[in-house]
Length: 153
Image (cartoon, rainbow, N blue to C red; front, side, top):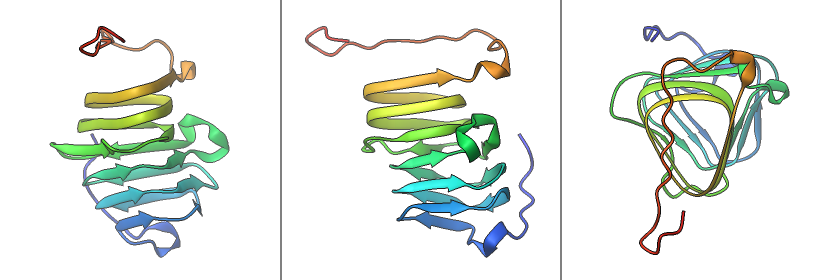
């Protein structure tokens, strides 16, 4: 993981950034203490986000030209949250490196790219699309499908 060495953000955005309406930020490197997205956040060029705090996502987070490699997110620290356990219709297009974060989504998640999390907890209708331009996934990958009390997957 990279070190936390914050500097000024493009467009002068705050390190505690909140998106409540559809927003397009310029490409560049962003240093954030927290990120909250309840609408659509996209980028007009390649971007890298270093987030030293929680990422509360209940909307859309998408890379420039909808190419996952154009948005890399490093979530630093341990015992972090990425997503929102009550978040419906979450849509992510990015490479996310967050080994100390617990990813959570409720209904209708679409995740394009790659994600490295401590844990993943999703409820109904989650679609994960791995970006094959990364090559083969390293190490072993385990996918566990959990059934409810009635035995439904």
